[in-house]
Amino acid sequence: MRTAMKVLIAAVLGTALAGPVLADDTKSIAIIVMNDTPQLLEVKEGLLKGLAKHGYVEGKNLKVDFKSAQGNFGTAQQIVRQFVGERPDVIVPITTPTSQAAAAATKDIPIVFSTVTDPVAAKIVPSNKHPGGNASGVTDVVPIERQLAVVKQLVPNLKTLGLLYDPSLDNARSTVEQVKKVAPTMGFTTVESGAMGLNNVPAAAQALVGKADAIFVPNDTTVYGAFESVVKVGQDAKVPVFTAERRSVQRGAVATVGFDFVQMGLVTADMVDKVLKGAKPGDLDVVRMEDVPDSLGLYINKASAEKMGVKVPPELLAKAAHVF
Amino acid sequence: MSLYAFIGALETGLAFALVALGSYLTFRVLDFPDLTVEGSFPLGAAVAAKLMVSGVDAWTATGVAILAGALAGLATAFLNLKLRILHILAGILTAIALYSINLRIMDRPNIGLLNINTVYTYVEKLGVPSLYAPLVLLAVVVVICKILVDLFLSTGFGLALRAAGANPRMARANGINVDAMIVVGLAMANGLTALSGALFAMMLGAADVSMGIGVIVVALAAVIGGIALMPSRTIWRLTLACVLGSVLYRLAIAFALSTGTFGLTASDVNVVTAVLVALALFAPGRKLALPKFLRARK
Image (cartoon, rainbow over all chains, first blue to last red; front, top):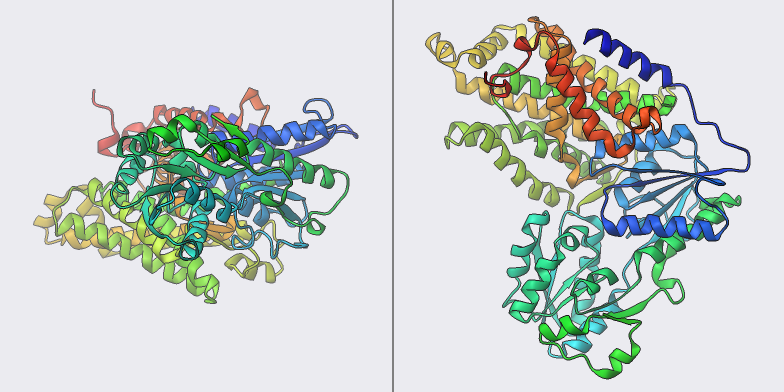
């Protein structure tokens, strides 16, 4: 065993200084996600698809190093360190904590982040316009007024909107703050229910029954992880459930105005392409998904809506990008 | 593995070595399986981050973080000693309460610590290149903490604490206040853990409320693995084993992360960890290494 350990240590030290060798025309990108949730993997899928459109094909002229921190911050720190050592052409961190870790680890390798709700508040960039530095990217900031307008349209007598979210997620939290800010101007009040961790989602949804006329779920990987249980509560208690993202509508939410994560990956790929062609991230404005033409669509789940006691007017159905 | 990945493993290993030292105190010396660390690690990060963005300098913020961690340890001691709650459960209760408290402290789930003066910035100002700044500072802090723990455990008070852990009944019969030993041990262990959390957050560039997930596993892997690889009956060797255990654990992860090595990929990290810890436990000298409750019954 002692010898085995020595061999391991020797092997580790031996490989310590050996870096990867790339062909001249091959570009390399390094992608890190915080955990393996389907939405984040869709962003990655869209990113690779988009890069292929720009002529970078994985395995041909593009080297892709994709790693997940599996929810562990220590591992995330080590992954970004490893990326810095490999010196890829671009580092693409997905979600807020990995973007912060990447930005802390390097001041010179270009960073194009994705799926960060508020990069300025998270201190990843000093400003969204011409950020300077080595980082820019795509924010998934939710066009909240338009989403709430759909809720109002489908639940005309809305007095109290229940907000179901995981308070430990920065992305979810900042959406909730926005909802609370605009609620008075749209004529309803809000009530919050926090679900810390997947197992608490059903109870947190049930806690809103009787208190809220409708439930709104922000972009929240925890709640989406147990979303079927929320749909069930909504259908049983006839409380319509709305979300901030398309996939969950397919899974039973009434409706949303949103973009999908694959497309967010495509938009991220556009910026990565610019950087690969020589642009500096500091010269590229942070892209807000809602400013991307045709990125927003109305998604409706008619069958689920009816089970939750909502009648969808035909004119709205006609406007929808997709009816599930 | 590149130089950067290697340094990343060293610095992360050293940051978590402080948790390992704390867990050595509780699990091994006191025989008190303390799970408070899952909450006191992010607590240290949260307190330091909040103070730093409010304009307090990084050293003071770190100091307050240590005190906050010690308080968390006291809370667990209170639950265990005064309310007579089982030790392992007392720690779990404090840890889950801290989750909410950390959210309150930070007022949001995540505070970014980029472009702000951290303790590492001061080290950089001394002329250390930024790549090595965390490594240098953490090495110094870990060595100091390790020596302080060694010295503490060799004082009369420290000997009493070890006796309280080894055989509480005998210790009591000899006039040792076992409860006081648990209070001090938990406060120290969680102070160390909070220090670790604060230093790690500054390195990572953010304090996040989810940072505590898995900390206890990492700490135990370091303590058990380290001591199994370097079995000893001498305190300073055992604390050294904890520090080395933590660094080796991170090197193993870096090893698994460097794609292509033996066909391992990033998603194999956990299984590599498990194999490594299992191998360490299988090593000769395991009779000395394992705390009672982790030893397999024959």
